[in-house]
Image (tube, rainbow, N blue to C red; front, side, top):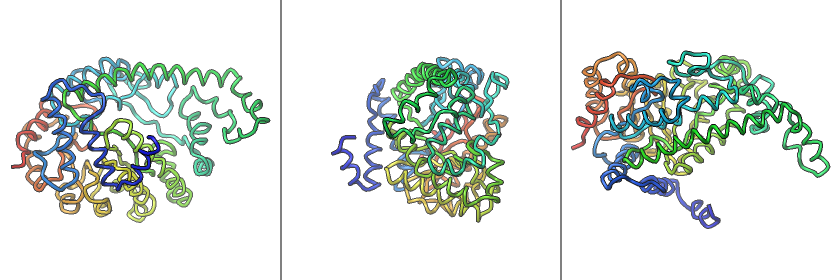
Length: 449
């Protein structure tokens, strides 16, 4: 932003910032709509979702978000391996899915990632199709302590240095030599420059830098296909379900950085240190979400929530270790005019009262195994809710069963607005008849008179 634009933004209220982002979202820069009808469809989709989120007035009908990872490719017989190694096939099957199923909002194929990039960097944290897994399987996390106990203070003191010289060398085999470079915070005087550069002349560090450049070239080639898909999807009138992405700070640490097992032990053995790390990550989570939303011209920030689900931790632990930092991220995003999209995986029945602390009409929650009637009772008119069409029903159920389930949701939860039809989780697989049943039935039946 220019100085004047920055000053103008600083003078806005959060509501004014959100409205500014929504107006940009309604008229996306650089998008060429294929017809006036496509542009009207796009604008109607944005308006429908905003109306549902703000809980101020009824949208024209219940919005439909098809949350997915590999599912669009799977529906056309394209294996996960092909989706990760052939970006043209990935983009074309995702586009065909939009054309054939016509959801209001889609999850970007960028979430699939490039297998080639992962291989070039020798990524250690996941197995993926064709790399320690069958070509027909989705990716799987490899549980380990990628951050050891002694790293806590390093993370708290300087997260960037921790990531560069400790975390990345453990999670990417090609970047292991970066553990031997000096801290850049020590480079502050002319007499230090020459000695500081010595490690960058060694063959192993240079190999690491070349691996980054090779991965960068592969990522650019992959991104060209993703970019063309996004432009075409919007040009046809489809709306992306998210612009930015972030996570609960506890999940940032516990999901992958420290790992589930180690973090569970830390909750008992060193909760104060764990809390310091979570608090240190909080402003970074806000910054990441805002940056993505701004870059994409879409105010929605997708936040998959994991460790705060029912049963993972006690209510006392949730109050101390999980909720305060998650709430701080939500409030920070709202302050910047963004719209947090809380993807509440697992059950959230015991956490619903906490969600009432979210500013009214600013965010929305998609639930997995939560009692939707209870969610409506607790959050209705304040926080937009969505879900929870079961993944099992989509994968092995019947179209009639899906329609009946969606009818009950619409009858019980949609009255008064503030409801979004969606799967309870991001789907790797699906059946054409059940996916069509959810989308088509909701479009026909979920109309507000």
